[in-house]
Amino acid sequence: MSFFTTISTGGPSDQELIVQYKSSGDLESLSLLYQRYMELVYGVCLNYLKEPESARDAVMQIFEELIVKLKQHDVSNFRAWLHVLSRNYCLMQLRTPRNLSTVEFDESYMQSVEKMHHEDIGWKEEALTKMEQCLEELGEAQKKAVKLFYLDQKCYKEISEDTGLEWNRVRSLIQNGRRNLKICMERNKA
Image 1: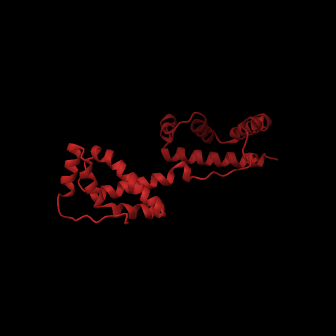
Image 2 (image 1 turned 90 degrees about the horizontal axis):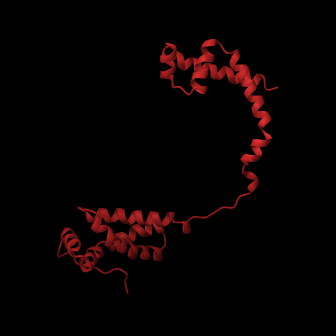
Image 3 (image 1 turned 180 degrees about the horizontal axis):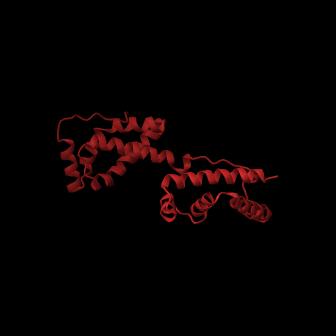
């Protein structure tokens, strides 16, 4: 026995069957319409799911979805709409948790925030002290621009308005100040 049956193309059009189904809820009209495109749906499902049995199951599940979704949507090109519905159904099946695999990993790869916090307080304080010292070594304009940008979290435009400097000049001061801070911090690392 074949999974698909051939339906003659004579009779009501797709649009007539859709209208008939939407107005009366007649599953026979929907069934007739769906049978015209079952091979298309099966092909889409087989393409995505790769297994004939899964594809046949999907064809039946898509029909069940069609019962609800066709009433909710205005469909002018049923074939194209059904193709998209079928594709989306298959993609959702591939994304379900039963299709996802989990991988075990060693907990030693994880960082512990608490452990880092308690062990590194001294290092962080030292780094902040060095950064403050290096900030003081910057020229006055660079120091002011860097503080406004990083500490006060102002944008280039706001800094330009506050200082009266051109936008490009502010950008240059911040970039050069950041580079000079990095050089100073690396130099004082010893």
